[in-house]
Image (cartoon, rainbow, N blue to C red; front, side, top):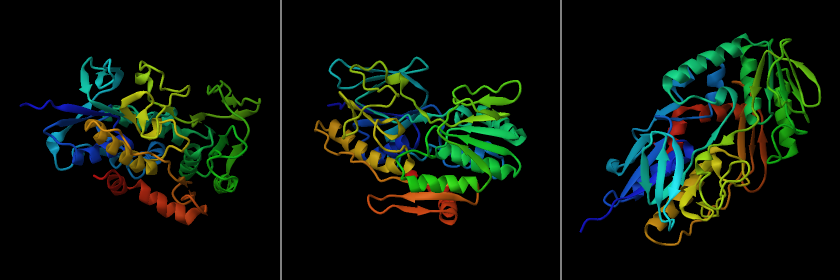
Length: 376
């Protein structure tokens, strides 16, 4: 008797997707299942060093941040394959017991269970192209802009905006750098006011101006090299960096019934990380609609829940693993030698300045740390 091979398809080769593939590759039976990763890039991109990478060629970080998928599937290499493509749609069977994903090539891939972990897209210099040659050109163009700019306006004072300010200051002590943020303190209210003030103090000490409770909606620079805020303030600018937050990559799910995508593009999941009213589709990583910051250290917990529940679904059992949330932690670099760090760990809140942040961030930047986290 021949057993039909069922496909488990993971869409998205970022941190969450690769962790899930790695764990599933050790659990699935290759005689019964095939594990397929569909990803737009032929390599995993380790994001923490990318702000520094796009600002300066020093350290040639582009040679460190990309990790190939050739060791993704542990032990049972026959269990999986990687498909380099973009998913443009998902079609479920009438009984919602499986379906198919549609690729930009026109091909389709059947699935018994689908996991979506497509992450988010940033504006501006972090909106990397997928190909290596295109990326090299992208980096050269942006590095040239950062080098030549004298008046830089950063739109958005979250961690990304703060880190851009620190890296630009490392380039030159004379550039004028301004952060415009639409809240009364930097970052957001996921963090206590004391830490948000500490972050502001840390970046201000490097001669970075901060404008709070204001915004910039039109990013265009005038012929007079100025840009105007929402409250009418005129700023000198020859380079504007949008850091207003990422957009979830979920448009390909728009055709699903019952509208599991919210107004901001995030996926509504139940505690099992199954997509609401779509029991054979699970989601993880940046795209899920959970009240938590989107950060890599949470994704091992997402992956544990998703893997356990995928196995239950394949065995015809009701999924029981629940995602109960995770503590908040953040390390924000301020160039190479400064920064701030926050830990909550469900209890006492800890805050640190330059030395701890510098050591921690340098560890997070490393390729070996990324491979360790991903289990490679």
